[in-house]
Image (tube, rainbow, N blue to C red):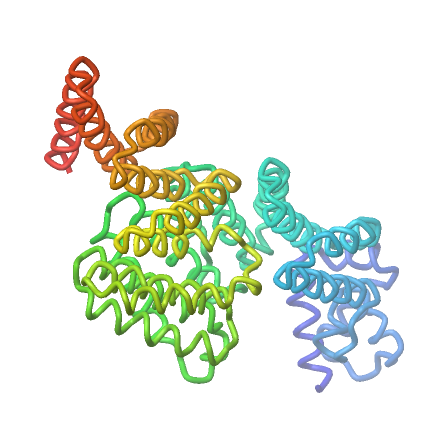
Length: 452
C-alpha cells in the first residue's frame, strides 16, 4: 500500500475519532507536523514513525494485517465461548457452566469485553434453560440483551433476537403461550438482516408457528411456516451451508402437524415422510422419533390403527436416544388409544399413565390433560365411572388453574364426559350441574369464534 493511500486512511480514522492534529499529537506523542506529513503521504517521514502512528491510531490490522494483542485476546475468548456454546448443544451443560465460570475473569480483563460478556450471558441462559432453572435462565438472557442494547456496535450479533427466542421457549414451558408468541414477535422485530446467527430468524419462525398452532390459530401458523419455506428457498446457493438440517426437519414437522389439523392428511403424511428421510440421514434421533409419532397420529385420524401402531413402535425404538423425555408423551398417548380400541385395558392404562406422569413431571399442561382424557376414556369403556370421574376432575382442575383459551376445547370434552358419568350413575344433581357448565363453555367458545 503506497504512502498516499496510508495517509488518507490515517486522516479518515483521525476524523472518525474527532481528533484535531494537535489533539492527536498530544494523545499519541507525535508532533502535529509529523502527523500532517504522514496524512499527506510525504515520503521523508521515517518508516518507524509511520508504523508507530498507524498502530497508535488503530489501523495496524487494516494496513499491516497485524492483530493487536488486546484484539487477539478478545478473538481467542470469543472462539472459546463458541466452543462452550457447542457443549450446550451436545447436552453437556454442567461442564459448559464450569468452563464459563473460569472464563469470567478472562472476560473482565479484556479491553473490549462487552461482546464476550454478552455472549457468555447468553450461553449461561441456555445452560440454565436446559437444566429447567427458568428464573436463572431469564436473568442471564435479560443481561445479554441489556449488554447489547448498551453497545450498538454489536447489535448485528443478533444476541438480542436469539435471547428473545429462548425466552419464548421458557414462556412456552411455563404454559404462557401468549407470552411466548410475544417474545417471538419481538425477536423477529429485533433481528438484524445480514447479521450473525442468521439461523435465529428460522428458529423464531418455527417457534412462532408452534405457538400459533397451540393457540388454535392454525391458518396463521401455516402462513408462518410458509414464510419460513420461502425464506429458505431464497437463500443463495453459496450460503446454503448455513442452513442446518434441524431447521429443514422442523419445517417439515410443523407442516405435517398443521396440515393434519386442517384435515389435509395425505399432504401432511407426505411432508412427514420427507422430514423423516432427512432426519434419518442426519441421525437426528429426536426428530426421527417425533416424525414417527406424528405419522402414527395422522394414520390414527385416517382410520389406520395398524399402520399407526407400527409407527409408534418404531418411534419407541429410539427412546434411549431421547434426552428430552417429554417428547415420549404423544407416542404413549397414541399407543394407549390403539390398545383402548382393541379393548386391551391394562396395556392402554399403562401407556396413558406413563404419558400423564411425564406431563406432570415437565409441567406440560396441554399434553397432561390430553393424556388424562384418554385415560378417562379407558375407564369409561370399562364402565368404571368412579375412576373416570376422579381422572376427569383432575384434568378439569388443570384447565381451570391454567385459564388459557387453547384449553377451552379440552375443558368442553372433559365436562361432556363428566355429564356421561353422572348420568350413568344416576346422580341427577351433578349431571345437571355439569350440563349447565357445558352450555356455558360452548357459549364461550362460540363467542370467541364469533369475535375472531
